[in-house]
Image 1 (cartoon, helix red, strand yellow):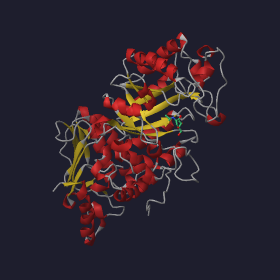
Image 2: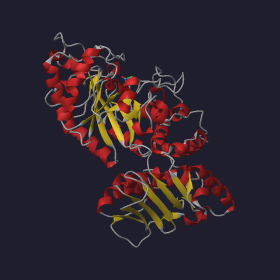
Image 3: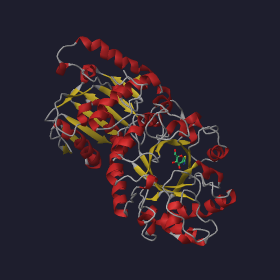
Image 4: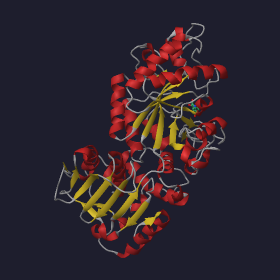
Length: 523
Ligand code: TNX
């Protein structure tokens, strides 16, 4: 009795029918306090078939079954469940005990990122073609358990997973979050915390904005002053900071353990005051400007006519490429108001081959579409009016586009006039605004087939710590994640806002300081 999304309402109906049942522990999971059904998950799955007779209950005897290739996901799942349940949850290759089985093998319908999840009285099976798919299935399973499973201390069960089957796979392969660590620096631990938070919603790219006017945040061994001097401040004049290459590798590996690929961005030719301040020879006049701690944009440019500019970029791109297992490097390219259009063309004409020589593909803000791009390059649309001829032309030429319209997807926009954090140049973006858009109609001339996916950028002019990140990302980020993952036909604000409300108890247990939008009945 698989239902497509339109039929998900049925799951609620099931929950209501069973309301007459007695004793808590024997009730279907859907009727227990903080009711969870298979259809409550964010992003909402492609198809759900509930079976209230088939709930599975974790016990101290439950094992996690995972063979060698699934072991990493198995260990991750055990790490999620052990602290709150207090159960041993051994990760084993084979068991006859009731188990959560993670199976890698040919799985119909779900592609390379999807999964099938089956819950019966005897156990849970997550099956996928890839470990990314298993990991996505584990994030779904996590949301099917009570919110208190997120506790890092032992708390009381029961730990009931609602019975039934989910078949699920993403609409887009690229579902990104961006964090600006340049305007304000965030520590390795703060970034890891955000990685854990976004992974819950099946985000699989973390774009790190590593260099801007206010700070250079990654150690470059051949140009050490970039980090030690260029990284020594931030917006407002705080101490700034940077990642050593070892720390950065650790971050990349941590993200990979959450099945997230890091895309490093070195913004150029504009947004480069921190570099220009660090090395006088990079300036056309040979004079280093002072460090900058304000929030204006568009005043800096690398010197397009100097050879040293490209020697510098060859070194920087080479070192960053060597730290990057992912295929893409992001070269910014936005708001180059201090670079003439002719210089911009010339500059990109030099830089695009440098990235290729270091074995990487190019991502950039959509301004790069004005230059002669290889078809592998990915422009990232950020504007608000949905019209950009160059982006549309790139799509027509075969380039894939990442969608980040600022008036929808920018997590740094204020929610409303009195929001304590954020900017509003793209407008105020309430939870419904962030949810209510469709990537395939976001930019004229860029249809579904030309879209790599979506990304929610979080610029940090006004943000200084994890609390600030969380207040801006939650609850908007899950909406962007759903737009990137769930079928277009499932898009429905009324259903979404109810599911969103059910996430709040999880965030409370996780210590996520979210914005209690009046658009959602948080209860
Ligand atoms: C625009 S959109 C920028 C950033 C700012 C952001 C603030 C884009 C590619 N660049 O430099 O931080 O607005 O919202």
